[in-house]
Image (cartoon, rainbow, N blue to C red):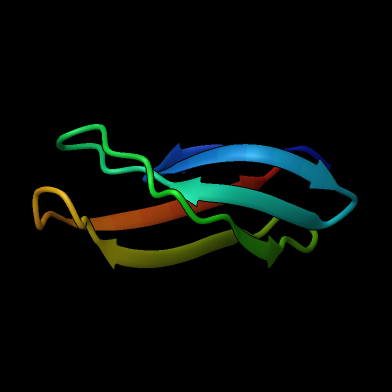
Length: 66
């Protein structure tokens, strides 16, 4: 099942259910330098949040499995 970035994220790669991504601020466009990983099961949606280092925006992260 492919993972789809809904907001606050740039998907780098997917290996089965394991998704590697970077956080991206939708306000200023800053992309975090570090990579993160999460497991997406079934038809679910992964949600998280972070505070942008560059502009201070509180950004929601959403990745959906389709």
